[in-house]
Length: 270
Image (cartoon, rainbow, N blue to C red; front, top):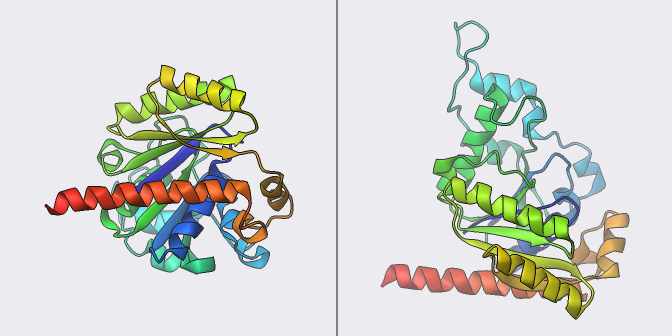
């Protein structure tokens, strides 16, 4: 199954993505967690050590690698390969984390306008297509609110767009924009996770907001001080507080996803 986790900045999508990856790996699944965010935060949430994280260079800013893969020998500067070789990238640059989770820090291209086509964009887009379309494992993408990396052909192979929201108007509005953008490129399976919810009133606010845009709410994750503290000390929440209310809620999310996957596989085998 291939999951794209997105949402407004600060809603806790990295916590959801990283914790979900660890829980799936604990159940014996092969899991590839992909950090497609400008900041290297997924590594902490998964539980990598500080000394290992400090050595990571996001692929998006690895200019030597991008030039090596996109340059066309004998062709003047300005031309580049649209479909560079990427099938060895996980083996070369993936980092094995706790419980066997494989982490790939992709990053995102910061220069250029939306929709610009440059060697780095071509490399990342082809890499993402390979990760989603060709690899046979659980792939969890921790993305920005934008989904520029997802081309139409790639998007059709994303099984679920998991939109993380919190109790705020901006968060709900961002969810609506994400749904529209994703729908435009062929993604039609959306679910939402409400995070950092303190009261029934906040949960009801989120439900009503999502219903307005036709986005089903799959599960509610309560506000949990232990998760916030784990972030302060740069420790994986699942290691710091494995029995906390928020971790238990993400465990229910994992159960819902795997049960849905099992039902889908069963129906396909009939």
